[in-house]
Amino acid sequence: MCGTLHIHLTLAKRRQPPSPSTHQTMSTTPRPPQRPPPSPPIPKLSDMQPPILHEIRDSSLGGRGTFALANLTPGTLILREQPLYTTLTPAYTTSPQSELDQLEEVRRCFTNLSEDRKQLFSTLAMSRPTFEAWMDFLGQISGVGEEKGDDEDEETKKRREKNEMISIMLARHFTNAFQLSRRDGDNDERGRRDGLFPTASRLNHSCLPNAYWSFNTTDDEGMEGLMEVRATHVIQAGEEILITYVPTLSTKEERRELLWEGYGFECHCVACEGKNCLLGEERRKDIKLTMAKFEKGGFDGRAMDAMKAASLQEEESLVDLAVVSSYHRAAVYNERDDNFTLALEYAGKAARMCSVILGPEDRETKIHYQIEGRIRRKLEKAERQRLEDGDGT
Ligand SMILES: [Zn+2]
Image 1 (spheres, rainbow, N blue to C red):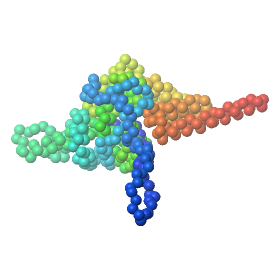
Image 2 (image 1 turned 135 degrees about the vertical axis):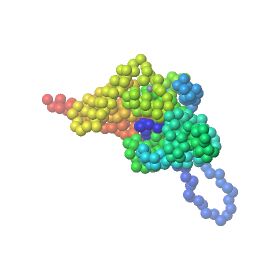
Image 3 (image 1 turned 60 degrees about the horizontal axis):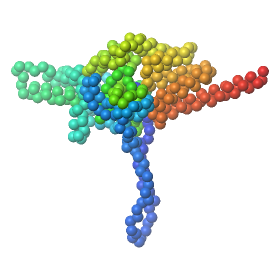
Image 4 (image 1 turned 135 degrees about the horizontal axis):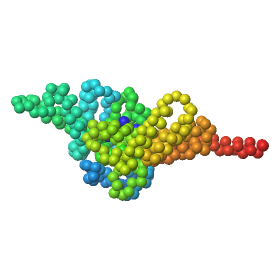
């Protein structure tokens, strides 16, 4: 699911297994081996699997999909899993060298997979346009086209078959990979990280998703960690769990193009073809325009704009980091305007939504709860002040 998704990265320390005691008694007389006192095992995060709340089966959207096995409420952790592999390539450019770097890195990761995992990889879906784009690229480099010529020699045939194998591998990778770049932008100098996941890579798409994915890294490089998928809406048992592969605020045309080129399908979701899709389309444009105002300088009317964006996002039922960001802006701009009651309301919304999408233990969630606490103290202080002033008159 490579896209310009907001993704999540926490520089949490890797949990260590309990270290053995370094205290040892030196003794010259042999003693019977002593049983160490029983200690409760400390589970690693990777062992703490949520209860199985999903199953993979055929989807009406095509191919396989992931379905809820129980009624899920917003914030439910549906899935937590380690990647099949993660790739690291220099920041993406359109130069042929960049394509070659990616090719080599995917090939290296694929080659290192166990046979079981290669088998699993081969069952993942593949986008036809992505396959054809790689065939074109390799054809240009090797001088062997995709079309068979009548007088083709053995060497040309072998070369084409090799190009096909590599293109299939790359198309599987790029159709299923999550872009694990840092959340604060795509300009990470250390390059572009992609991850492939056994189950999360099978989640299907909706432009109005009911789940949110994040990658919690456990190392400073952002390469290792766990994929987490949480429900953002009420999901009924039997309903398909859907994430978005593309930015939800892009227009329908933009989404169609990205989904076709990247994943080889046309979207028929409720946001694209539902009863209120035209209204939704206008609303998404309005949200984007309103949010774009924040890029410009000046503070006048910013609290109003942030509240407007948030309200439109609520109407559109979006639950993601962009909404958290609108709530957060509404909180701090109202705080700056000394509107502490409104500021507190929005700070609380930001914290609760962040908890839903990233989990209550997430660093960012905790920061939003701290901001809520700060604003609550300011509100209480302002109220005490008001009472004192009232007493004085
Ligand atoms: Zn759609």
